[in-house]
Image (cartoon, rainbow, N blue to C red):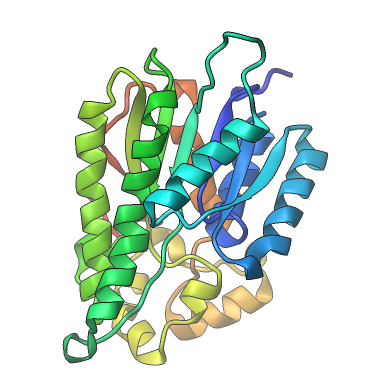
Length: 283
């Protein structure tokens, strides 16, 4: 059976765990070779495990590459690592990056009086400067026939005004603005879209304070697909949903939407923020 991304090369930042690892698996299942990017030495074993599992399960080539993409040197090292591990198939052939998923991100929530300059600078460095530097470094290697795909991981926080997210929400709004600009500037190379998850299972969501969760409970209650289902969702998810108002997305659900945007059939969609939040935010 032909896989739609067979032989393509994709880069997923922050891919050692969570949404990033799920996105990498979705792309690998469709035949995409992958660079599994991670930042810190503490994630090295996780990234290596993800790469090995995807290679064995899906018969693709997946390699971990450590790089802090929020710095010019890190972004350059990421692209250099991709070139090293995936050289052109023949002499004179052109090295090409087909898919980029800018997933790496951090969140530091604080009420306005507690926001620090360090919080601001670090969050914008990772969430905004990082994707810009990666796309900038990759641009010479993008396809020249509009077949490339770039997907940026935004958040409903760009539009919902959640309390304590002055900085995080601002970074995601900036990322959405860049998405639209890149869709125009890179039109002959790639489509450029963003997806905007709401709550998603994993350590970032689990780290939220009870006060924050209480503040977004109304949003959760009004999100159509966050209603937990007995007999379908795991028992612990149903129990937690009874307290919080609903279940977070499974990482594979967000990954499925990213994967959808990376296929040939999505070639007429660019410059968009695509729902990946179960209906929490409707446009």
